Image 1: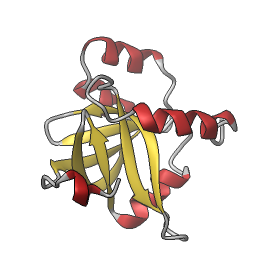
Image 2 (image 1 turned 180 degrees about the horizontal axis):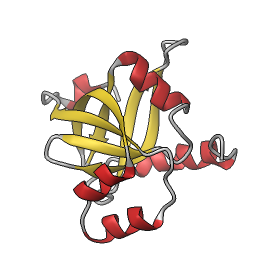
Image 3 (image 1 turned 30 degrees about the horizontal axis):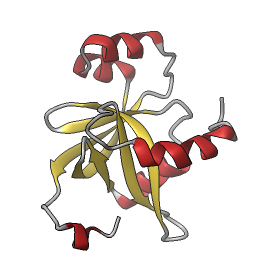
Length: 137
């Protein structure tokens, strides 16, 4: 597949509201800025967390808009399990890196998926705590 299906846009509108909360630890919200438009975007993603990184599968390849935006900016923010993280150093890695990091059912799910485009790896650190009034998201 060369890009996400047309239905992905509708799915994303619902998924972005659910992702990033504590009760859905697989799903996160990636916040990035358009490299041409300068507009802020939110994209729901599935993450494989490590102590210092997030790994994000690239089922539609490295050329998706969100991946290109993150590369162009050199990073993004991610809301995961109710917390904000500042992410940097986007690097493309193979499926074997995600398999090494994943455990349990997540690992089995990755093993069963055909992911020829690999993963985007981002270093992460918790964002400074902000009050709800400062958040803006």
